[in-house]
Image (cartoon, rainbow, N blue to C red; front, side):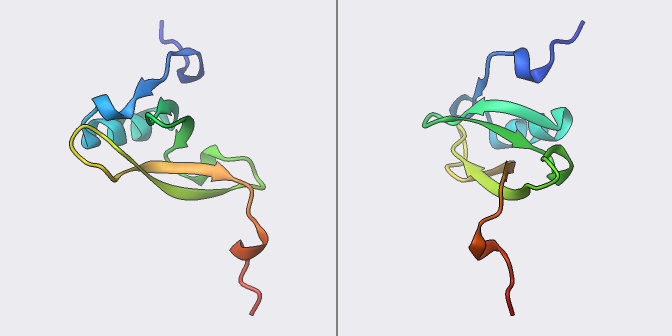
Length: 85
């Protein structure tokens, strides 16, 4: 029986290869990972965010890449996120 990602101990990105970290996010859709500085929830795309949230591309350190484009993080948009022109 598979354990939901939210119930698992977070993986540590600095111990993973970049391709493995990206594949994990893509396969799971949403996963909690430790970047070495903080623990965050990363998602495959905006469909894993709340309706009011946007998805920001995130770069994290991995074993082979200091700026691995692992996936996205959901967040509420701020004033500067809107195109007012």
